[in-house]
Amino acid sequence: MFEVTETLQLEGVGYRWPGRASFELRVPNLTLARSETVLLLGESGSGKSTLLSLICGTIIAGSGRVCVAGTDIAALSAGQRDRFRAEQIGLIFQQFNLLPFASVQDNILLPLRFAPERRNRLDDPKQETARLCHDLGLPVGVMSAKAGALSVGQQQRVAAARALIGMPPLIIADEPTSSLDAATQATFLKLLFAQSRAHGTTLLMVSHDARLSSQFDRVIHMTDIAQTTRGAA
Image 1 (tube, rainbow, N blue to C red):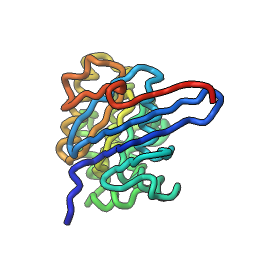
Image 2: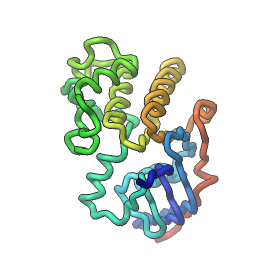
Image 3: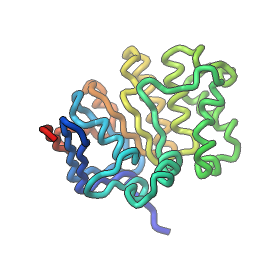
Image 4: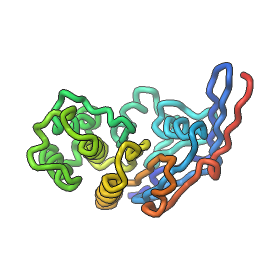
């Protein structure tokens, strides 16, 4: 059976936002290997959010190809893209996007409700939830706690566990450490790297903080991989 060694591939990708002040993003080539940890650096307005939307399939490139785990995103219908994203991509948001009144366990298990393939990779999802909580340094008994009652650092680790559960091939983390102090930030990244590498997961983390560079396998600057243009519609 053919094994996909490149988790993410963008070739000749172009996208133009409609509107009065048009914005166009072009990415000639971007490839992320299986198990690779990559830091994507870029200033505000450099196109990072547009690039993530293209990778996740929430918008579709006007030209070129975006492939995740060997699948061309544009070949899928809107409904298929939603299901594919749930199965193949774990997302860690800057604001975490946890359900505050739901338990930690329910928050972590939530993606499996929409991703049967991720669910089927696990013998016991609740046991896997407990393992992730332990490995990410969360306290014993945290699974029954309400997510909204946790500290910011703990909520961030719950968000990471939710992204990691079911071993999706690609994790996208959008500024997940911006609200943390340096010590908590370093601990979180170390734990996230360990979990990603243990399961062959590719990690793409977006940030504007170049001080994180030394901790990643590779650092990519938006200005090196993409061209952006702005002008009247």
